[in-house]
Length: 175
Length: 437
Image (cartoon, rainbow over all chains, first blue to last red; front, side, top):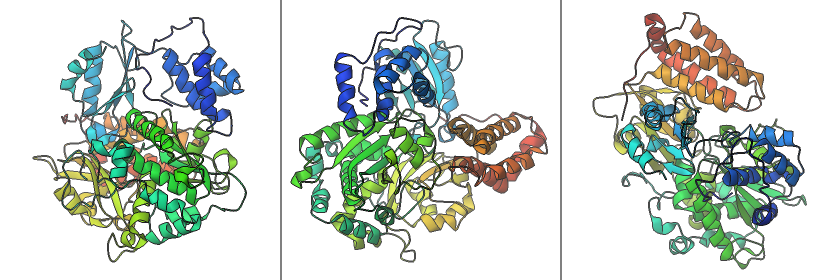
């Protein structure tokens, strides 16, 4: 799926009525992707990415819509959504910040980078969105850029060689 | 080459020749650098001829297992009348490894060319490149390159005018280390949870969508065009003269406490001591190496003495207590609390366990809890025996090797650095680790 989708997709609120994602152009895009695979089920990960790009997270109602479109059950779709860490089952901050703290980065001071993000965003704890709804900070397992410790992902942007000193400027640069 | 550093004269840049060269990313740029000559040549050959050349070259899988690539391809029965699939494993998630990322960022067409040749050689019309979801930039580069390749008629129903169908598609993962395991990867493509499958049946018999499938790592496939262009002999002669089992060049990703982290491409069999001190610049000022993990976090930890005696190939690392793995070299120095890092590795595996096998689901969790308790200063004298017993229960008993991989740093850590564990248990104090910035 396309990685160049808008980084700041509007985040639907919890409990807001679900408006279908797979209508018009999105439906056409999904059908076009369907030509790549011999089964409908194989469209599940791409479809879930489309939902997350459009809504910011994947609600149970959205899972039900995906299930209907792909002829699966909502329970099956939820089973898949909950397996993969990148799919959000709840709304997250406008800027979703993932700091790699796995061993190769940990030996280079990644935990200090994590703490700097927590401190400067005002997030109370890892995974807890800031009161203004702007930030969520989490630890992520190995981002696959260990030679550029510490890598950080903010929404779909991938930053390399982040140090605690750079954190205020990075946050100031977010729109 | 030593990207992001300037190339070192002892490197042998083949796959990494254009790392950092923005001109190589586009189709035109890639063609100017000799791109797609190998695919054109391949499409004029019989698939079995290509497989024979790859077999003769000695190329082995670069993802970790080191299985001979040509032999793997030859398992695909070309006349079985079934659709075949090639899956390119670009899930690169093994801590310490970041080479495939650079291949896709700088030379996406090199990978597409390798995928197309591989697909044709195994009788597949479709190749899925499974890229981990976090690799947004490599995904964007690969998708842009694929659009160019389709528009130029390199891929599609009449690939390069050959009359043959070759399709290459990106399939984006969504955050799961286990999807780098080949059968989990296939499940993930099919739209399932990424649980590994019991083998047999092996993928060459029943793989993705139940059809014969070959799974190759990015670096493996990217090497194939060079082998077709330069010949099997050329490739086979790269490596230690006295070790014909490991041929060609290999990308090593280096991270942790060294002067110059980055990717380096050297002939297999390169002396590891020279690599660590000469190419990577040795330890940071005033520090000493303490432990080296040379092939991604799943391989046994080496002492510095073991590392310095190793040759960097499949056999050379085994001779000194570890494995080549994915070539992700993690360097840990004497300013680190090694037990804390092993605990962090265990937490990684606990987080990434797919949880379908009991030994792994429970073992990774308990290993993490005990290790973190030791690091917190609450360890007991029985803890090391308990850890080793758990590790024994986690080894060789599960569907895939994630469980074994979690046991490896524990067993080799306690085996080779027992004093570090005992010191923590005895002092019952939390050791503060100085930050490295």
